[in-house]
Length: 86
Image 1 (cartoon, rainbow, N blue to C red):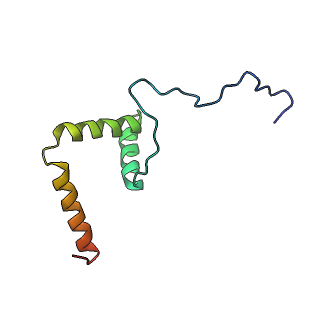
Image 2: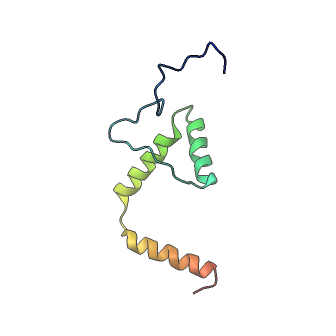
Image 3: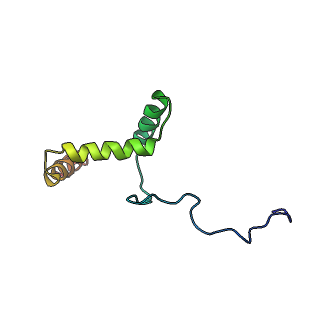
């Protein structure tokens, strides 16, 4: 750090505030999923992949016809079969 740097008026916290109605979180997403969304943004000539993920989740919720419990049970059965436990 240079002697000329003065952070006495600096503020702690994120540089960009989180808009009302949104929450800042940390999640783990598979690399291939994230890559796909980034490719879609690049193909569209720009934008925000996080906004695209948010939109995709909204669309999924709006169009979901199978109850979540049924979907979870199917996925668990498939995973157990893959592992030879069923």
